[in-house]
Each structure stands twice: as C-alpha cells, then as structure tokens.
Amino acid sequence: MKVSLCIGDICIPAKCPVVDIQDDKVVIGEKENICTLTKEQFGVLKKKILNHEI
Image 1: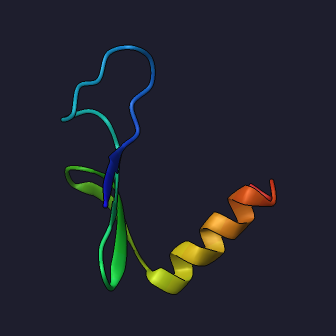
Image 2: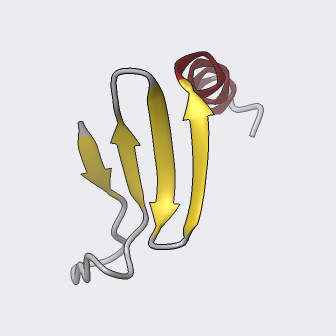
C-alpha cells in the first residue's frame, strides 16, 4: 500500500511525503529523504502515534 501525505487542496506528488508499506518494510519520505523501518519498528511508531505519545 502506498499513501501520499499531502497538505491542503493541492497535491504535488514529487513534493508530498509517501508512506510505502511493503511486505517486509515500510518506507517513509520523499525522493532521497527517506526512512526505512522494519514492520516491527513501524508497529511501534504507529502505536506511539495512536497513544498520543508523539
């Protein structure tokens, strides 16, 4: 699954960060500014966001 994180009414794909959930990893960011997480790491991040810890 690939989701673009656009702000506002105008989406410019080259400038919008993307969350790309793959079978074995999750890639977050845009172009050369990316962060690659394992599925376990992404689960921890998601839990912290949902619990309003970050």
